Amino acid sequence: MAEQNLTELTAEEAASIAQIEQDKDALAALIEDLGSASRRKRQISAHVVHLVAERDAELLEPYVADLLDALERPEAQTRWELFDALAYLMPTHAKEIGTAYDACEEALFDELSATLRLSAFHLLCVWGATERGRSKKVWPLLDEAIQCFHGDMEYRDMLGFLHDFAQGKIEGGVAGELAGRLHFDAQNGKGAYLKARSGEIYDMLVKRFKLEKPQKRTRAAAKGGDDGTEDEE
Image 1 (cartoon, rainbow, N blue to C red):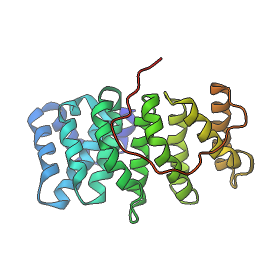
Image 2: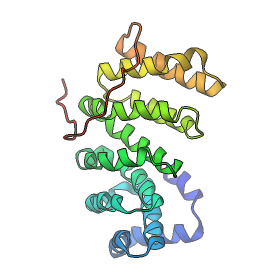
Image 3: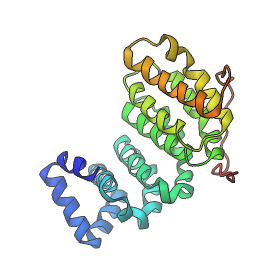
């Protein structure tokens, strides 16, 4: 993964990351720039943070609270870069990242930025896959997003995130409703990828959860609350 990301970096980005890896003060300065009065400086900082997360997320562990705080910035790019960075920190910081639920919900239905919507969807999928209780909390939002953006360009990537979600620690009822939601596309989806990917997720869920005639979710409002943590059986 790191090698692949390195090939995609510009010379300036590679130099910035190399400095950060060698100098903790450089990383602290980068995080501080997330609170800069300059929109451009915040965006550049958030972008580099995202690149650092792809290479070595452990470097950012002392700054999770700062990344979460920066989700309050008004510009879309700062937020989408940080949503993506936080996804890399999920294995060790899921509880803290759960406090970004409201920020994700707001961004998920942003009317101007498809990239922001997709990054919010991604983080919700990754967080929801960590525990059954969390999957129940995020599922109403994910289900609504599937319906809202089904015909949009980003839906292809959304299906990839749903595949990862479906492989996670999701609750059985959520699995059934996700399978029910994807059943039509699995049978009749327009386009080879849409039909094949939907079918792959559907078949996996049916087999894993031993589902019989799964039904899509009946419409209901998503609820907030705690982080959705539920004890494992």
